[in-house]
Length: 283
Figure 1 (cartoon, rainbow, N blue to C red):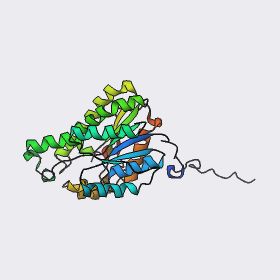
Figure 2: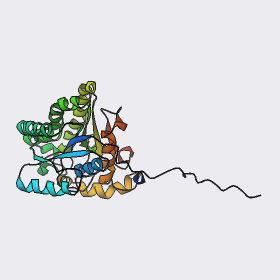
Figure 3: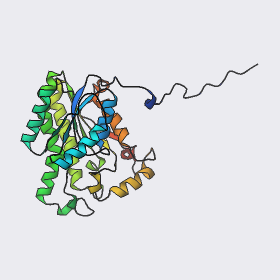
């Protein structure tokens, strides 16, 4: 008698990369802060948002060189319609007022804001330098890396209310919780960012506005090059991470698309780890 064929254990499993999801964010429009080039987390997030049907408007740091670099990166993303790109120094209230005013005048909806900006004076991002961090450098890091999330949320509230709600998403890192040599004052700023997101979620939930952060693993970017220990992080992660590799920009981009989408309608005030599992490893 012929035996029945043995069924494959994972016969119904399909790679998420093979499933077309272009309608996931169809009709959603938002503002992305932090695209410096095509290696930045903001770029990978925007790539995923656009691939899933969203329309993205962009911010760049003021200055001809910065604008040109951001424009070139954003043009690689494609998307529908003309590229919307406005300069904004997020440390200046008048610049934030200007970009949100310009956005609302040219767009009917505001469904999401991506906050992927941070700054700390690289002089203090070195091994053993945290204790020497001067007041100005400390406060500057918190202002640009954390307070700006609250400042953007304040300006996004009314247009998001008019859209029926929205999603605000910030980018963090595990150095907010544990000592990461060389991360120093940036770790303090990221801790402030995560806490700011939770309190914003508490205030804005009544308007169906969700606020979350993604704790991404180390990625070789223009910003991360200022951190003294970035090379060691990238070398050690494949040895320690459960997934045995470094995180890729697309990993974070996919998580961001999910958090912005209606599939995450019940998720707010959370910090989502996308670091190949490093945060779960004890030693």
